Image 1 (cartoon, helix red, strand yellow):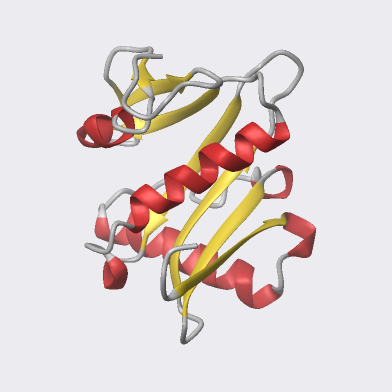
Image 2: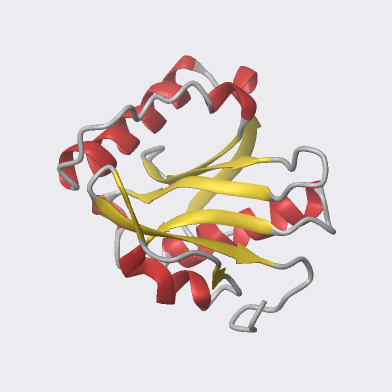
Length: 159
């Protein structure tokens, strides 16, 4: 675990009201307010996801992400990957992605792992073994690129 932080994965029905509230507040603060992007942040998919909440020693939510297990032969998918502005610069993003990769591999070791990355973060995700699998496209006014990490690949390796 990242020093000074505790994190855990929870299914939607295991989240307390406070945990769900904190996750929604963080997601809205970053994805809608900070990035000035009006879109349906509450997308109806949270009940189908596993949620990772990373808290500091005072219990404040420092980072969050959600993970969707593979459906059939499809890939697992990470999303809503976010670090609170109050905790940036502590490499929590790297920790978050490693946690997501490990959890996806534990759920389905032979499934690829996908995500839709904001295009300016392509290098960050590439350092964790993800490669672009689409051209850059507009999603809610922000350039994105679809990325995939093959199972059993090493960080920084071409997938």
